[in-house]
Image 1 (spheres, helix red, strand yellow):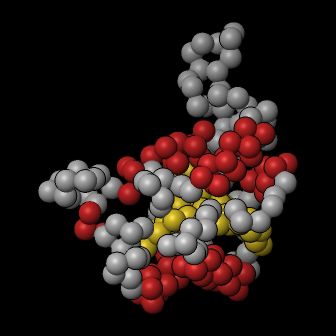
Image 2 (cartoon, helix red, strand yellow):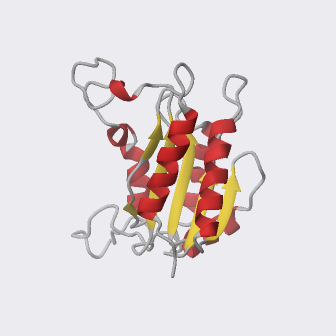
Length: 198
């Protein structure tokens, strides 16, 4: 992997101005650039060209999706991005339709991805504490993990044939933040997944 595409999916709200997500993008950019990676970055607050965004996905060896968790999912502006960009890539750049053909009904739905040599990583910021996950005694998530909650997001990338890298999470960022510890963990996470290029 040499080419990394970072997407900052943050959407500005008065109670969530995006400083943490931007800081994580900045740290990823510095970390990866210092190790020899080529980078492209798209931010939801900026204008973008749909066809260029499709090409960034084709160019990338790995995608890092940096996003806050708004109402148990991505902000609306990234959902809009997916609707336009991912729909534009349905004709072969990202996938060849859904993988099925009228002549061969044995092919499975979701098997048409053309990015089978590429990877993706979710990096998420949560108001929820870490203890709320993976514990059946916690009623809200009922023992589910972060990756269970983001299963539809994983399916979107799987639809393109991509493979997941380990998800990174900053927990409890509004009521009990530990940003400096999160930054250290993030750097360690990046170092584990993206070693220095020779």
